[in-house]
Length: 262
Image (cartoon, rainbow, N blue to C red; front, side):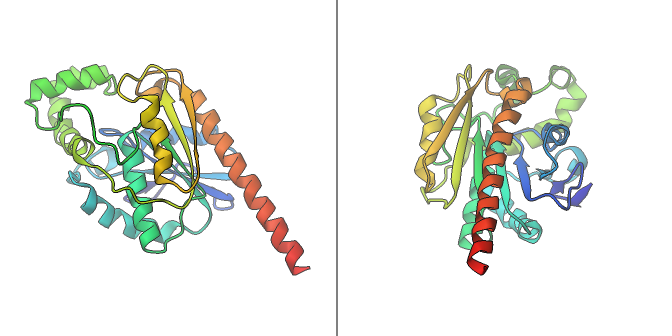
């Protein structure tokens, strides 16, 4: 079920206490997260972000710059935040989520109870790798193969790659060129990293806490940069752990409010 073109809600839970909003990695789409609903408790309403240029929005032009993406996304986002929520983003998704939350903070839109950054160096750290978004087609495909995130059946299908390359170039242009300002986000932060990710170091992950008012809890998960796909159970355990802590805090706040009323 779609809330808008931007958001997919695979199993609506209107009575859930919190929402979980998930942002895809470069070249990815909402489908990475849709199966999560089968493992999350009923207290969590899963919403997956679907940017243009992919899957159900294939015919729409993808964004190649961060600012216009956030300009459009925040409009729909602000209209669907009606309860406490968590944010999860993997790789480029974590940087898009962070920039969106900075915009929300500036506009006095409700912030998340917790931010989960996955498989990404802190948003203010520049990429150490050479840009790939403007490589010739054959070189870009070779780089994608080395990253191990694009399905083999797509990489080896010339017609599919012809369809996907504009999206991949747009996403990687944002990934290769975006660097956040060091503004502080007023919420809690958990960071996930791949134990065999050769792109992102432990220091890269730890630096996320420089962008938040709270210290970062960093957890390493078995797998390479795309551990979110290869080790989904471990990722979900951490997400559910964070969600439970948020729910516990909300219950304590509710109980405290009731005592003050009495």
